[in-house]
Length: 284
Image (spheres, rainbow, N blue to C red):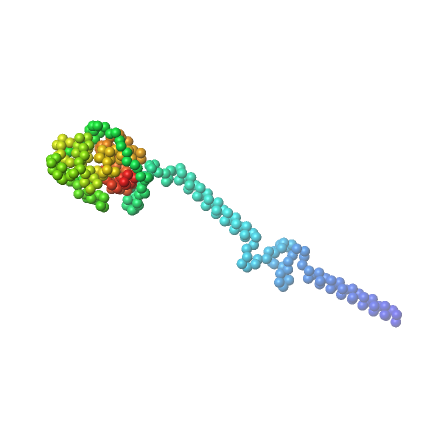
């Protein structure tokens, strides 16, 4: 009897030991290897290296790597833009873009664009010691032509050009001139009459009178014709348009300088001393 009980106890002990070992093995299967993260359902992400952690991606939020990539992209774009701007600036400096070669000089294209020119600082009238006799070689005398009109004046619009559109050369003796005009001055021995703010040649007053220009001369600051011309020559000289002598003669060189100035400043090219030109020069 004692022998049978001993055998039963031995068998029970063997079963108990085996059951404990099986339970231990099952618990070990449930625990994932070190460094591995289990996914829902207990399955490891297919293809993922063993021991490498799986990155969790949250919808709507960028990872640190993505943020760094975006910052680097923006940085590269800014560097490119700054480099391009610097190269454009250097190119503009090399070509001299925007550089003005003459003081207050504006291209004649502004006239068509309707750009109004800014007035310069007012120029005070000065007295110049002009030669007593004209240099005929530099300013040849013009010939009288009855009823001659100024070429191109029909295209000069505006009230300030009316005197040029209406002008025509007339020949009268001195009595007629005195009876029609109370103010007459003599420049280089030639008579000029004053009318509505302009000086005009009084043809016929002296048959041999010398005139370098047949047309109106704006009576700036109540000066006689030669002093008006001399002041305009000096102003054009200071701006680099006139390179001759300040001699008070409205000869070819002075008229060419006037034309260049008027063209550059969007004025009608009258090649004469008119009110808009003197206003532009700051002499009105």
